[in-house]
Length: 189
Image 1 (cartoon, rainbow, N blue to C red):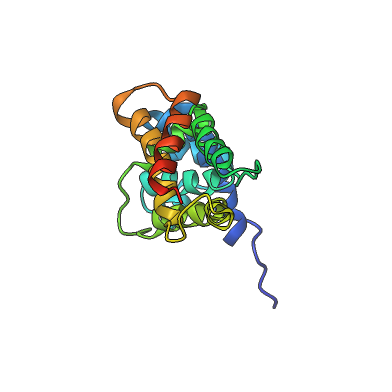
Image 2 (cartoon, rainbow, N blue to C red):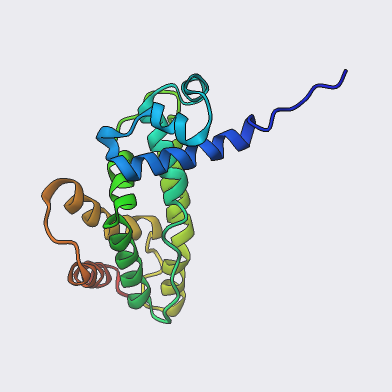
């Protein structure tokens, strides 16, 4: 007898549940989002979700990381300054949406040991996707050759996250330009 593979297993379940979790998080916010809501949205039993993600926090953080990775493309405006401003503006625009705010808050939630590398892998992937902007700036002579692309990018986006999560200060186009100007003065060739 041939074993029948369920269409509800493996990667299909993972994608279905993560999409439903992100929708649940966006619609209800982190405080009111539930695994039961994700189960209803996805059609996957709550027990299956807990078996795979162990905790509610793991589920919502992983859903956030999976979705957010696609939201901010690497720009090519023709200038290093323009590209960096475009990155900060794209981050600002995304985290100003309900989905982005939910993602930002969920990404700040502590995880248990079930997914210790999820957040690090997400950030490494995002920084890798955007590093070509910095590498182009180095090739153009706009940035010093020893500029660390990851550190430069973190320096630009961390203040946006910090303002939204901690201080409530404005996050706008003026901030994007100020951050880029500050970083470029420090990393100028």
